Structures are given as structure tokens and as C-alpha cells.
Picture 1: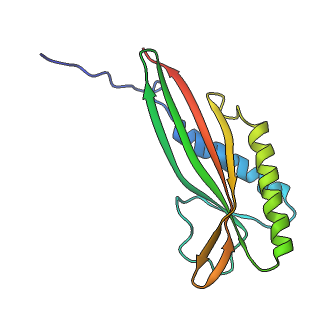
Picture 2: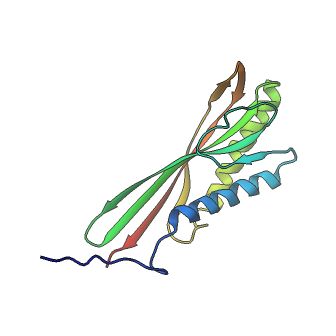
Picture 3: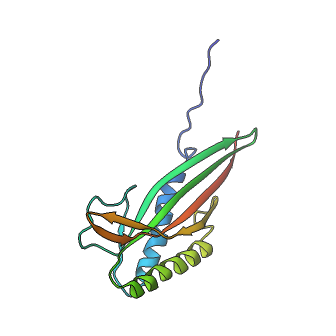
Length: 154
């Protein structure tokens, strides 16, 4: 028996992962421009190998996706983290910046849940954390997010 697969061609191919990256970059840029202090952005799936004098900065962690199917629908759930990395020098000043990061990002995610038009982008958690690198200690709290898309199947 011979089978002929269907090969999706534009405009039928999906760019959901690329769209998610662009939306996250827009949210991070909105945070950066709204702050009175300099914040950098790193778009890698890992912390920078060496942190010398940079900071604070925002790092996008790994994004994973889970896909499920039923007879009518394909559901894709993307999950990931955004890390806020900052020097642990003045604890009061650091605490203020981390709290501003947490509060403002929560509001940005809430106000922009439908930023991607298709699906829902939402913050699902916040977690305190530290990063030790070469004897230096950095605050590295993270925001967890999901982006869920349901698409009809032909």
C-alpha cells in the first residue's frame, strides 16, 4: 500500500515558537524601558558563562513544549522561565528591584495575555533563586510562564 503525506506549505505552517520569542522580547523590552535603571537582556537558553560586571539583566531560560491531540484539536503548551539576574551587593536595593521585577512582570503578563492573538500567554509562578559563579553570588529569581494554543485539525 502506498501513502502520500501532506506537506504543509505557507501560509499553513505554524510559527508559534518564533511568535512566542517575539512576544517575550516585547514584554521584556516594555519592562526595560519602564525602569529608571539600566537593565540588559540576554536571549540564550542558559545563563551567560561569565558574569563580570553586567547586571542587572534578564535571561530567557529553556522553553519546552508539550503537544497533545484528539480527533479535532491539537493543543500545544509552551512552558519556560525568565530570570532576573542582579548583583547581591546592597540587600535593600536588590530587594526593591526584585520586587519591582516581580510586580511589573505580573502586570505585564496579565495585561497582555492575548498579545499573541492565538492562544493565551500567562505567568504561572515566581520563584526566588541565586546563582553562584566563580565565587560571586547573584540574585536570580525567575518567572514561570505558559503559552497554550489550541488548533483545529483537518
